[in-house]
Length: 297
Ligand code: NAD
Image (cartoon, rainbow, N blue to C red; front, side, top):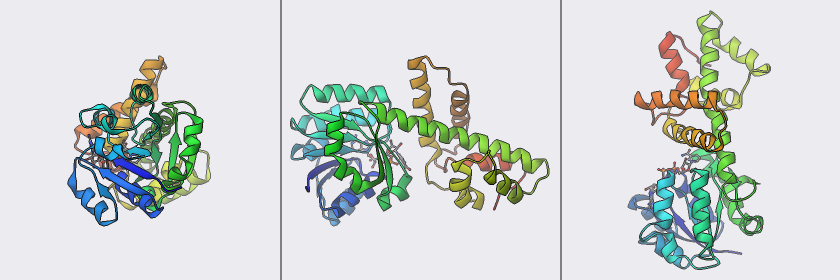
C-alpha cells in the first residue's frame, strides 16, 4: 500500500532515503532547515513543506533523520515541529542515532497524543542509503513495526526488531561502540607490527586469516584507509557522538565502560586536532604519522 510520508531532515542520509521511498511509489512531503536538498527532492517528485508540522499534517508516516538528540527534540517537539501537525494514528519513525532515553521520552509524549513512535537507527552509511541496502535497527511496539515493514524494505536490506522503544538506539550504540574500539585497536596493533619490522601486506594477510581480524580491518579499511583514502564514509565526529552516547548509557546503567570510555577520549582528541570531518578510520593515519610508517595495501 502506497503511503503519504512526511520526511524531516534530508541531509547526507535522509535525502537518498527519501528518494528510495519515492522510487517505491510513496508520496513524500519533505522538510529541512536547509533549502538545497529540498529543491532536488522537489525535482524528483516530492512536495516541499514549510515546517515539520506541515510535513506531518497529511502524513500516515513521519520519518525524521537528524544529526543529534537536540535536533530530534526540536524537530518533533519544538515550535512548528512534527507534534503540531501530526494526527492521532500516524506513526513517527525516528531514524537518527540519538540518546535512547531521549528517544523513549519523545515516544512517551507522542503516545499521549495517540501517535506511536519507532526508533529505527541505521548502519550502512551514505552508500547504503543510496543503494537502499541499509541495516535498520528498530525499537517500539512490534505490531507497529510490522505495519511499517514495507517502508523499511524500501530503504534497507536487513531489518531487525529489537524490542521496546529505545532498544533500536541501544543496539545501534553497541554496534558503533565496537566500531570505535576496533578503529583504535586495529590502528595500534598493526602499527606495532610494522614499526617492529614486518611488511604491512604480510601482517594484513596473516591477521585476516587468523583470530585477530575485524570487519573494520578486512572489509572497511581494505577498500579505503589502506589505500590512503580518509574521506568519509562515516565521519569521526559522528563516531565521537555515538561513543559519547554509549558512555552516557553506561553511566545511566552503572556499567563500567573502561575501553569504551578510553576510546571516546581518543576520539575527543581527534576532534581537537581538527580531524572530525575525516572518516573515522583516520585512526590509521594518526599512527602512520606518529611512528613515520605506512599501512598501505
Ligand atoms: P546530516 O547533517 O548530513 O543531515 C541532517 C539534516 O538535518 C541536515 O540536512 C540538516 O539541515 C537537517 N536538520 C537539522 N536540524 C533540523 C531541524 N530542526 N528541522 C529540520 N531539519 C533539520 O546528517 P546525516 O549524516 O544524514 O546523519 C543523520 C543521522 O544518521 C545522524 O544521527 C547520524 O549519526 C546517523 N547516521 C549517519 C551515517 C552517515 O554515514 N552519515 C551513517 C549511519 C547513521
